[in-house]
Length: 380
Image (cartoon, rainbow, N blue to C red; front, top):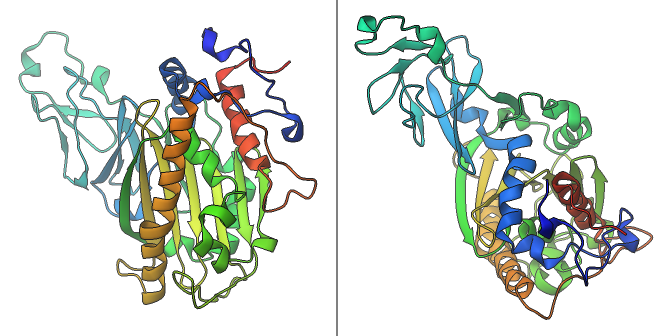
């Protein structure tokens, strides 16, 4: 990938493999539109992308749609109860086939009524019987890889991509250890946020709690920060507090559960975070979707035993939406403005020997994944 802005420039300090010796990525990695464009092919068209939840596809004909930048896709359950994923485009003249989510008996293009079954086969094309040499088999929908992971549905545009479960076997063990009922959860709620920040700033922010004591005072009262630790492994990292602290002045009180933890969060490359709170079974995701070099759309989906959350989980969900998210959004938008300043280019990662709750080694881990995927020559 020959893009000049990816190469080390005059004034850049080195980005090193060792987090303790490394400077952060230069500011242009968060502002330059050519880097944003390069990320599409180098990162997002080659990685597993969260598309939705298996509970949204319970019966044949149920479908969901998703977009990876300009690539529009849909997932559908076929009549053999298997999930299939396809590019969401008619093979006649390129019209999009489905929108949103729902259920259908057959996939019919809204433009010229070409019809497909749930396995992507063209079943009907009006007047094609009068076209010499017309072969319906030439016009099947183009499929993409699909995988269900802890109830979540992922797609991948890379036909040679390694299965997600093979890349992160320990992540599945960790999630199931924290939430043993994960297979019985359904989608209960989606919250949407529009953020004036590059998507990588949003990920950086999730991956460290160096800022928590300063910016999330309710959060640090909710969990035992002394036991909060971040662990990196391949394309994911875990961020878990094993103790529970509750105080009368916090936003809500965490209830104890059968599993001994106070807070659990995971990052999954490239743009997904997964959350769990103690108490009633629950899991949620926060997906950071790039919308330009300086904008991000965030989806937070909540997975619960029923559509209606318990009183305790409702308080946790309200805290996430009304307190924690606005705090993080404000921080990230300020950092984005700072990345455009002529007075800033790079900082240093704060990494201590104990890899404590204040350490930023997981941020470096993510940034190294970015640097490596882009083939950026930032080292010495």
